[in-house]
Amino acid sequence: MKLQFAYILNFVQAVIRTSRHFVLYRDTAVTPQVRDERLDHCRRCAHFQGGMCKVCGCYLAAKAALASESCPIGRWQQAKGELRRTWIIVRSILVD
Image 1 (cartoon, rainbow, N blue to C red):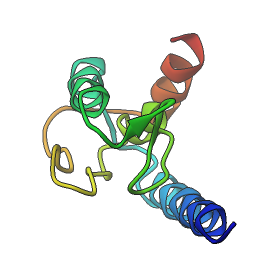
Image 2 (cartoon, one colour):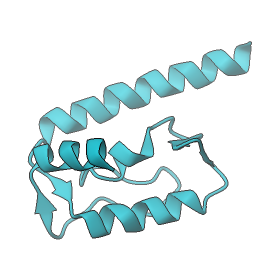
Image 3 (cartoon, one colour):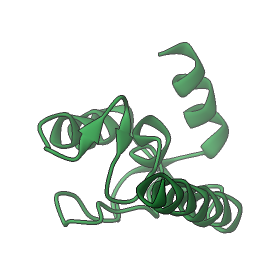
């Protein structure tokens, strides 16, 4: 029970953090190629489970698409290169 509460709290904190980044950096999104590279790193990680990261609690399809985000254990960093508008990300997440 205690572990479940910690996981839920971590997830809520991650949603709030990611939402804040989404609002603050709403025009910064990575290209599909960068997103796919990030997700490949995630899929090979022991902390990847059901599309989510067990370390930060984030839904990785969304997190990997945001330029302002980084991996909590350092597998990939914030993007500084080619970026796209966020509405394109949202569309690509919904279509993929």
